[in-house]
Length: 353
Image (cartoon, rainbow, N blue to C red):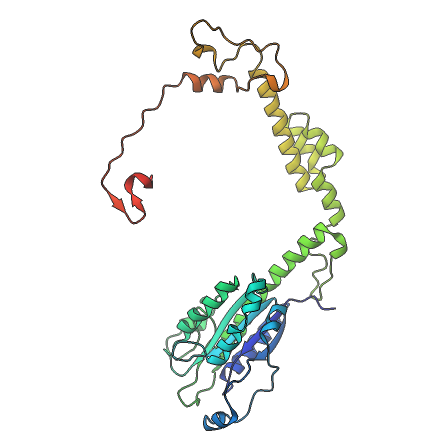
């Protein structure tokens, strides 16, 4: 059984420009430990209109439904621009995700975008911005492409794509086809998107296997039990072995850390905390023996210093020796006068200290 993260690439493409980008993105996804599947949106235009638009043939791709989106670990949406927006076919799919939103089914899923426009400045970036509003309401994690490709800094020729994702320029009549640089950017976007999905997926598997060793799963890409250690041993160390826990209680950080060093990093932390607590207890006991130094100089008339020699446990007042005495002897700090009358975007100057 495959445990690879599932990446759905969902497109709307009449003249196959976006489809060509999707195919190259899928190659990048599949080459980096994830499983890519390309879907298309449901067509809302009648055949008579598509014929007038000179759409020669429909894509031979499965049509996705809104409910199926919940099955993906990551989703990449590819679409042509429509005056800086995405087409109604893609919007119809996203508008149908109300139930998924109510259930939180798309929350924390990774999502990205790629585009096609008729001209260089045909609204690819604003199309991404409008799509992000949907993703944000679902709590999805948007993954921009950035300027991860060297081709995006080449100004000697027309190359589609932006920080928001791969792209291509089709011309108004669809005569321009994606060039090699654009297809390479698309493949690289698939690679980077897959690496993020895979890293997150492995992290989830590692946590699950550490909490319950029976849930450890071997992945096809060689990531068998992503923790790399025996989960039962890790649990034992997290609770604390006899050596680490016992020596942590002796009150010395050195022996506690030494006792825990052979019992895993979690036990080392537990030992250090135990040593600190024991040391703090010793300091409290020393500070509270005899006279209460924190209140000796501030007794009301007729009342002498408190004798705590007979007090034990919770009855003894807590102090920290010389530190408490130093605090008691310190003169009261005079508040610094602040200048008034200056206002900033976030409030008065008084409030910005």
